[in-house]
Every structure is written in C-alpha cells, then in structure tokens.
Length: 496
Image 1 (tube, rainbow, N blue to C red):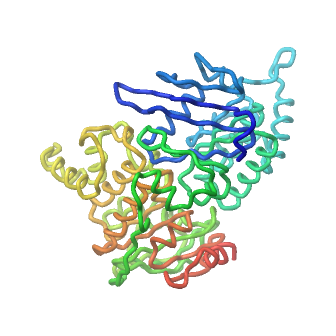
Image 2: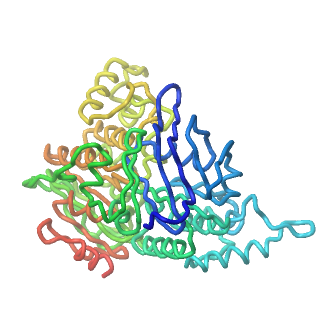
Image 3: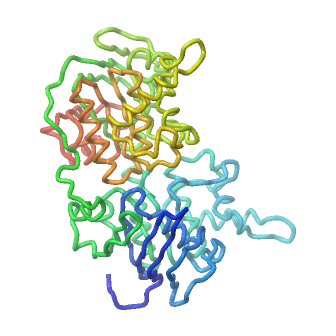
C-alpha cells in the first residue's frame, strides 16, 4: 500500500472510557482510498468500540478523526453516512416483512407525486444486485432470505449509499466457499473504484488473501500497523494475543474406544440420504462440506430437532428412538447449535442460570432450587472450563464470545453426555479464545467423550479431527483419517 497520497481517514490519539474503564487508549489509524485495511485483535481488544466511534454511534472522549482532510466534530450516524462511511454489521438487522428492494432503500425511498415510487426502488435495487452478482428477485421478502444473502444485500446497500469507506465486520462468517469468492470479487471491484474497506475477521486465511495492511489492537491499545506481506500467521497471532501460540490445535494422538454412536442409512428427503458412520469414545469426528451439504441437518436429526424419514440410530450398540431433544439428552446426546446467541443461551440470565438451565431437575427439591448445590456445581464448571466472568451472577450477554461459547458447552456437559455435537464451535471467536476451546475439546475427547465437530473452516477440521466425514449435496462422499486428509482432498470430495 503506497504511503504517499491522501488519506481518506486519519485517526490520532483516540481515547474512550466506560464507567472509568478504558476501552480505547491512544488509538492510531489511517486508511487510504482503494485499500483493504484489516483491523485485528481478540474479542475485547476495542475493535467494536472503535468502529462505533467511526460510524458516529458513540463519541470519543478525546483524540481526532480526519475524513478527507476535514476534522470531524460532533459526529452522528447521519453525518457519517452523508460523508460516505457505511458499515456492514456482523448481526444483520433487516425488516422481515419488507422486500429486498425496500430494505436496501429504507429511509431513502424515491418519492413519486404522492406515493413512494416502488418501481424505481425495484429497478435500482435490481441493478445493484446485478452489479454484485447476486441472482435474486428484489421483490423477495427479507424473511425468506438466508443469512448469506442478507450479508450480500447489505453490501449492495452500502454501494447504493455511494460509500467511500465500507466497514465490514465478519462479513464472511455465514458465507459458503462459493459466496466468499463472490465477496472477494466484490471487494476487488470496490478497490478498483477507490473505495476503502476496513475489514474485521477472525479468519486469518482470508486476511492474508485480501488485506493490504493490518492494524492490531490489544486490550484497547494500539499495537502496530504492518503491510500484510511483513507478517505471517504466527507473528500476527503473537501480536494479537501478546504471547506465542505454538500449536493452535494442540491435537493429541488418541486411541479410540468403543463405538458410542452409529447411524445407518439416515435419510431425510431433500436434506440428506443414506448417511452411515460411527463415532467412538475418545474420538473427534469432523463433518465437512459446503454450505447446503446437509451437515447441520444431520446433527439436528440425531438430536431430535428434525424427524428422519428412514434409517437407524444406535447408541452404544442399542437402537434408540429420538423424537425430541429431551429424548436425545436423556439418552446421552447433546448438541451445541451454530447460532449460540439465538439457541445456545438466554442473554439476560446469569452465568449460573444458563449453566444449569438444561438440568434443573437435578438442582430442584419439592419445587425449589437448591441454590447451594447449584452454586457449587456451577463454580466447579466455571473453574474446569476456565470461564472468565465477574461472578456467577454476571449476565451472559456481557461476556466475550469465547466465554459465551464455554457457557453453552458447560450447560451441555452438565447433562453428563456420551456424545457431544458441536456445530461451528468457534464461529465469531477470536484466536486466543479459539485456542482455549480447542484445548477444551481435546481434553473432553481424551477423557472418553465422543465428539462431533461441524465446521466451515478446513484448518479447524484438519487440526481437530481424528477422522473426517465429507458431504456433498446431502450425500456422504468420503470418510478420511487424519493421516490421509488434506484441504485439497476434502474440497475434491465436497464438490463431488
């Protein structure tokens, strides 16, 4: 990235505190037209606070922000949007009952003589979707869209706003490999038109692929800015976490035990068919495949969330009938959903309330909760899983993503399962927290648990799995052992 030329954004000595605690401490940042500048750091590093300030959502305590050479004061969202800064949030908020076109131009509708000009909105929206390569009818209601489609529509919305700067917060977290390629093509086109992009992601592979420069924050402090070609994965991780992580996955060689789960001919029409595999005690089975391959659907069926059309499920050699998640939990099967915020925990409840939620019958006597027993068991779980919280009564919504995920796993483990199914266990989690989750999974497997991991991240699947089941369009195409598996082999079978 050329250091000459005019910066579009220049931030100097930015500070922000909440209740006397410093969230940002002397942040420095600059951005040039036509560059992708990655902002990296663990959860809690200050990235979100910094982006909220740039968008005018909150005001800094001190420091300066220059946009195109002009000092910005008394910022607000409307002013920043007018200047040309747009943000694509990780958690997308679209109005479900409105169409794609209506969502794109919400608040900026074209007016006819009396009514909103729906025809012009539809026409311009279709041009935008064509521009980004998204094949979708603009009259489709938002409630019918996938998360991936919503993500791409948010990009179209930013383009429609004639943005000079687009902040992308985890834009690929819900995208398939094919959709990621479309995203990267859009980014390349935006760069060629001089649009500057601030890119936030926990996926290191894509950072090294698309970023021109990388700025690292740690504990609210500015650490450094480097050209991407000056760093490798290990040096970047070290800058982010303040220590070296030698082996991210810490995967041990294990001797599998008895077969815990066996599925035979598992079929759900339109989702998957004739699935057949085993999972052993002291084993991690990875399930890989492109989005839509049937990975999550198989997990939901095993856990009793969805009804199967045919096939058998055997637990420890005995055929079992699972009609509901309650049946699954009673049999010793637990499932941790990919959407932990919607399905994993209740945000406004405390750490202790969430941990014991699935197992309250063991803490109840004559209709009353035995608080001493509940506290003792929860405290032990917090210690064992190294959950960082201010206390058992802290609301889970106020914890980092990594600690929220540990809470969800703790809740699952409290049912004393024989099989733990983890769907995208590290989605949206920073690298340091990922390392802790991986250590926990290995520890659980080493202690005799059978574990299934479903993941879109091939390095995660390869690093954590003893064997890998590959799916393509609902069909089982391969089971690979650790020694023979590679990214190329998995992708070959995933597009089979």
